[in-house]
Image (cartoon, rainbow, N blue to C red):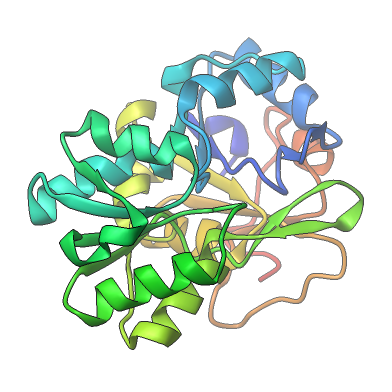
Length: 271
């Protein structure tokens, strides 16, 4: 097959298009090349701090064309997934204000920390103010029967200069250990976000590529969805026999070179 024959391209953001507030090499050039050839693009992120509008603004500020409908965050799916499974309900939130607002927009009531007994769902996202009191309230609520949902299980959020913030997954694991329960995951690698991305792209899975730096979330989820997967391998990253990307590259600059018309790709490489 040829990369240029695909119709839709889904991009992870953190560690693939950018790290923190820095655009990664080749990102702008590859995305520009896709736009020039009228390829459809969606930015697919496990972000639990921001909604599509703010992510689209950040991309635009960095010189990457993007509209809010081209950004799909796991956070925007959280409220509808809780409603689908549990109805409109009382939710204890471990996350930023945007997370609480996203839940309220879907008709849920946010429960104060000190009234954790009222929670029917505990929802965990990336929370810079996470502390012992929040861990206690969330784990108590789950241990007493509240449903446990997390935006994602990503252990780290990549930043500039090789640094990172603990991810939502790190906080969810703390609640899981304390409560004795495992969470329902909304974002990658679960199917919902990939299904929604394909709907936004308007193409069949075999006509779309999933491009990302995480084998566990981007590549595993993309393969399960039937998409062509491209692993933008971080420096020093080791392959995993259990999760094999169709293609491994070191950067989007390398991927751009493979986008040339007539350039055929292997069905499986790297991995």
